[in-house]
Amino acid sequence: MVRAGLTAQLVTVAGAELADAVGFDRVSMARVAQRLGVKDASLYAHVRNLEDLRGRIALLAADEKTIGIAEAMAGLSGRDALLAYANAWRTYAQRHPGRYTATQAPLQIDPELAATANGPRRAVELTYGLLRGYGLAEPDLTDAVRLLRSTFHGFVALEAAGGFGHARAPQDSWTRALDALHTLLKHWPPAPAPSLSQSQSPSPEGARHEHPDRRQPARERRHPAL
Image 1 (cartoon, rainbow, N blue to C red):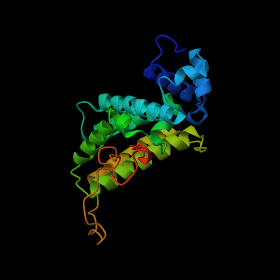
Image 2: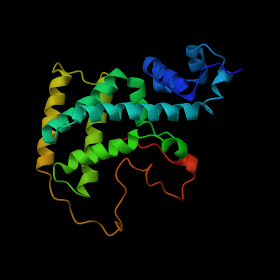
Image 3: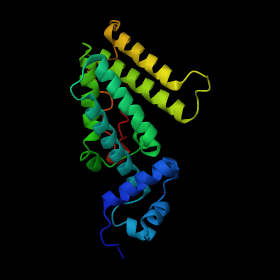
Image 4: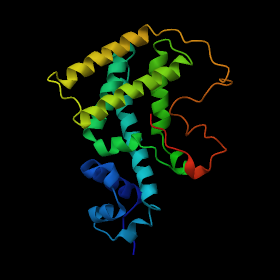
């Protein structure tokens, strides 16, 4: 029997809270049911299975992370916008480690569910808007997006894993890294001529949910990790 008041949103939030507490990889239907005080079977009236729940957690986290970044960047540009973006990214990863992991996992999400989420699309808009403020255009935009993602994710992942053993405070290195990124973006080197294999402009990095490859089965499209 389905517990009165239980919804897909409540199940997703419970899963997200569990992910932060024990780790995204350790989330299970049984643990979520225990957290909600219901039988395992009650969850299946709201989410199909664990894969569906994991996808919902990822989309919830993407929305939350993007809202935080957008609020931090509001009214800012240039270096100030870059720092606000980066600090909001890092803060979310520190406060919600399980949810953050979900945003970076190569999950398979039902495209109908992904289409209802605003976070991934808004993240693409914010990131490209930030970089266009530095005067970048394609293909430099995509290269710069990949650089930012690699830098931010690499730093917070190493920090979370205790990978910074030197006595120098990680915060000092983080600040210097952002200053270096700002300098690089201001003096971005010109792109080389495109190779012969580049016959058309690619979709924005992280925006595969907007332009899915129609040749792929719907259940195999991956969640964007921007």
